[in-house]
Image (cartoon, rainbow, N blue to C red; front, side, top):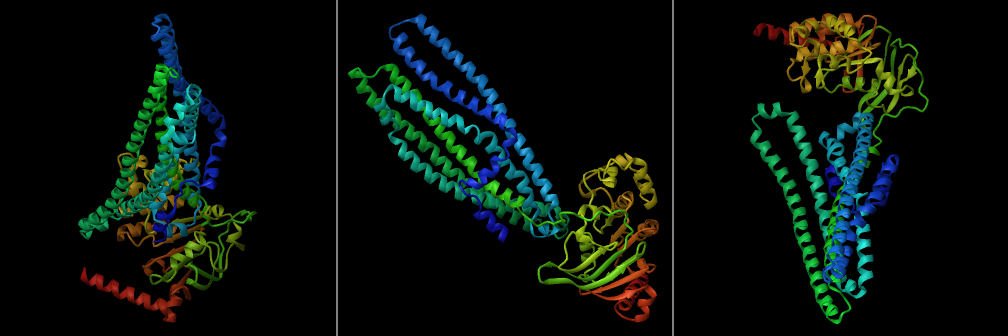
Length: 596
């Protein structure tokens, strides 16, 4: 709800602080900007000369019937059109170039920042909202930089040139012609206010639409298995209808405003003709002056309309930039110390001392947890769902920071280590394997060119993945669809094991790594695990207690507390929580065997 309210209230008409931050992105390209401004001035003055040339053509050559002089004026007019087209080309090129370069920089900065955010940010923020920031909101800034900030100079300068030429011909006629301007300013003020309010609603509904779409496409299998298509379509239709209604309302104000501007333009020209007619009869004004004024008035309203459109661009950019900077200013990160301790060679000794941890402040999920893992030991963590098993992994890898206590790696507080360096010594294999779009090979080496094909193949052979990979049409170059949709759960798990082994970690973490595979694949993985564990400090989280009986040490978690610790036989002898878990699984296994 807080995020939705943010979508409603953010987005001022103009914010000097935001604009100052946005203009900093122009600084590296100031040479292009200066060139674009010069071209803007030329583009604005060349059209403003044409009515003046028309006046001269009428008064000095058409009425006196001087056709030779008229040909000269026509040649000059044609030359201004050609020069204007050439200048317009360079203006468009430089403005679009600047816009694209700036947008490229902003997107890189955003993506880099998102990668640095802690998982706590993603826990509370819908993915669709973050994607909207990097796509739609950045596109809004692209319009401002390529069509707004720089090209607004041509509109302003054109208005200035028009006023200068009009006043030079007739001050009185200029005043009469511009009598409707106060009405225009008031109408523009109302238009801006209404459009700003509607645009806030558009942004809110667009973010909701993106979030809903992303979430339900990701969970499409759940929607289909429970036959919820009609209900979800109805909900999507409602959100989509809100988005459409908000857009239609914003379009309504444009549909009213621009015809009103045209009406004011017509009234202005009518007043001008009425006043000029009397002046022409008296001889204080010429037909050339009248023709030039009519042309100037048609030209005058064009930049007025353009500036109104640019206001809309500016409005969207202000709303978008506020959201973008809110994301860039988000400090939900795992902060490293200024001078991190350098790790020489990791032995793999892990110590938890009186560790307390909460995902939400005050709601502890780990309470006073203490244990040691010696280098090369295999330690299993067991417990019911919600006992805190995965939380131990999350804080060891510094996806989250602890509330109280200390975690040591080889005697060093992990908060004194660079988080990237810490994680480079840890490989993590999760129950839900995530594969990227690409190839089998790129999903094993994750784009690390230092890992050669021989290493990838050797790792795959070790974990038993080479057999099925070699049977694919393109082998290790086989294309992996989004999330590995064309691969089985077991195949994805084997690829994740090959990935972990390829990076040769000192610390290996297996989080429910075999709970989603069949018995045959599990035996294959268990064989691979035996090889993986040799010489490494390993932490294994498993529901199936049969898979961790040979662990050097087993930690039994219950409601966030470490209740028991020992070997499989020692814990059974205690007849405590572990014994009860084992008995439940043993009976459950007997029931399944009898049913089969």
